[in-house]
Amino acid sequence: MSRCLFAVYLTLLCINSPAWGADSITCLGRVEPLDGVRVLAGPSGFSGAGAVLSELRVEEGDWVEAGHVVGVLDGFSLREAELQRQQELLEEARVRLKRLENLSATQATSRAKLDEARYSFNALQAEKKVFEARLEMTLIRAPQRGQVLEIYSYPGEKIGPDGVVELGETDKMTVVAEVYETDVGRLAEGQRAVISSPALNDEVTGKVVKIGYRVGKMDVLDTDPVANTDARVVEAIILVDDSTPLQRLTNLQVDVKILP
Image (cartoon, rainbow, N blue to C red):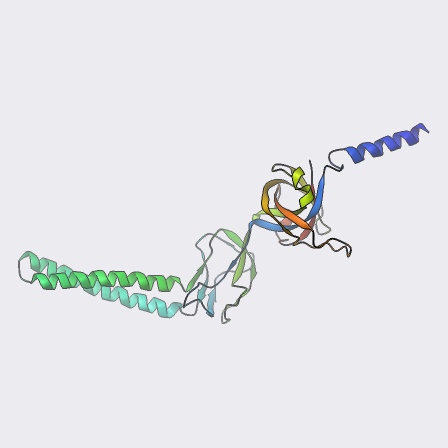
């Protein structure tokens, strides 16, 4: 009899412990790099609308730094030639202006010719900036440091609505937990969390670093046919302690338990 009472006592102790009790928040979540996934599209404007990708300079899994050229559009060669011609005209104007300035020092040229040369030089300088901007519009640059997660467009293809590539900082992985609105009052930054999934060999731990400000519908749907798919949730960002197990699992659905 005493053994039965002791077993009941241990069961109640486990159920009421902070790690397993009703104070823990359980929900679903999805795996994302820190700051989410960035989709790089073609530049907006006349050179980006329906543009064809001429060159792709990355492969899936590559790491790029902010400003790195990921792809080149088919208008690059034309814009590069235009800029080169503008630079030649600018150099000619610079030489002419310098010559007239030297002649002006000895009063061997008129003031009007010198002013005209200066105006021409300044105008060509301003036009050069326009050509530089047009050339830049044919380059697709990474807006931030990140790893190439997926490629959507290849050389010779027109860039579609999916863009060119997806980038994410996979060395800083997070879990976006969808916490039921009824549990938000028990949620706070700094709480520890345990993440599990059949795709993971072991549980992953982390800490709540951000709580959303908006209540919305669930994005991660439970496979249970009787689950409430219209549930209202608030997103909580959990920064995991070790990103290695999740680096290749962006968008993986996981089970989340947030400890009190």
